[in-house]
Image (cartoon, rainbow over the protein chains, first blue to last red):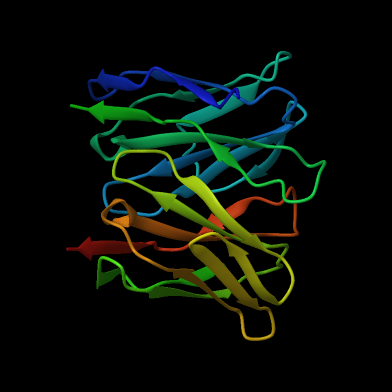
Amino acid sequence: AAGVIQSPRHLIKEKRETATLKCYPIPRHDTVYWYQQGPGQDPQFLISFYEKMQSDKGSIPDRFSAQQFSDYHSELNMSSLELGDSALYFCASSSRTGGVSEAFFGQGTRLTVV
Amino acid sequence: GQNIDQPTEMTATEGAIVQINCTYQTSGFNGLFWYQQHAGEAPTFLSYNVLDGLEEKGRFSSFLSRSKGYSYLLLKELQMKDSASYLCAVRLNTGFQKLVFGTGTRLLVSP
């Protein structure tokens, strides 16, 4: 079965650079979530989209922005990168139809800022 | 704010049973999820409770008491591969039902 696909899997950037992370949700899933997970920490919710509209916003810095495109893929844009942005970034998708509608996670993008 | 608490670490031996507790205080509730996460990997879905009671799935069971804001994940017949972090997550019924994760419990299974 198709899963959530994230790219790239690994990314190394220097301070003050810009990074773009991509997420391709499971087909027919209508909701995409972005989470940030620092070393030894639980995933922190950043932002979500429902049917290509921003639906909820968490602890996302102003330097970050995200959008969902017509094909439902989503991109997280991160500017003026800081050392503290080094983390695993997970994208998850779910469907609001059906019973459980658990979130399925992609493999994540490991961002290292040097 | 949202508050979801779990023990930080637990240890158990192969073949044993372990119970991982989760307490929550959230602004809204629309289900509780348990995820397993191996280091550096994506969380994978284990179980889901929205009504009070016990849900059983093979070696894993999850229990929910909404009035107490309490859930637990029960793992039976522990295997070495069960060594992982276990995340409790509450789905809110506000907005578009985002998941809020607990602090995670790192389980170490020893021979």
